Image 1 (tube, rainbow, N blue to C red):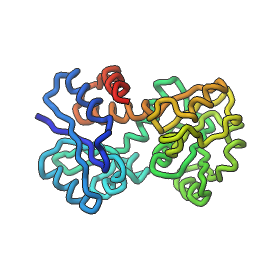
Image 2: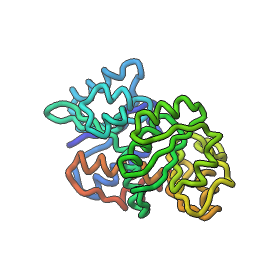
Image 3: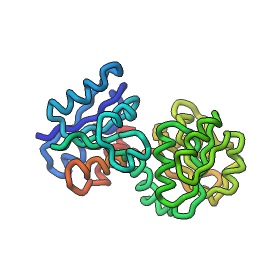
Image 4: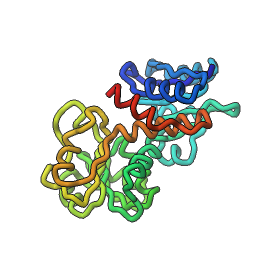
Length: 266
């Protein structure tokens, strides 16, 4: 039996296990997906222990995505972002991927949103913002980064080719000329508030929120009320899982089955 899992702290409410278990059943694979809640002070031991125990692959969640980067041989995308959210334990050693980036791009493709030549605004400058910003740039968009701490926006913009950094006070002006606005902060996760002013939305925008619980955040509700297209964070979560499944197993992922399992637990 093949064993895969998610490592993080905390992980008890992770949605990855039901999503992957449903995929394994659909494809009739002899595999299990389990959770590993690791001690942050012993994370290197945890990664090496998983390798020694013969775990086939791991999804990595907060707060260990940067720790994982130091443990694996990262692929090109993970190296650019500087973080890893999926590990494949190969005969030649652990290889790391950043499927937050590719999961975001597949979410936009699923909604028929072309990022080539788009003006894209990313709100935030943390780990999720890095993956999204690099993804947008890879897809051919021009990226503007807005953050409460403007120095962090400039730091991220310096890493992303062609990007510019801005303070949150500039967000309304950025949105006026943008095609895409992505919330890569945690605003809206535990409160009915948005990082973007409600009156800044317009119907020519596409709104993407990395927050997936609740499914409809205030950010997305305000965008929809203005006639903008919306893409919820659950689509990124789904497609990063799809990417991991396909890489680990070599099988086409049962996307609809995974999506149903994910939304049943949201």
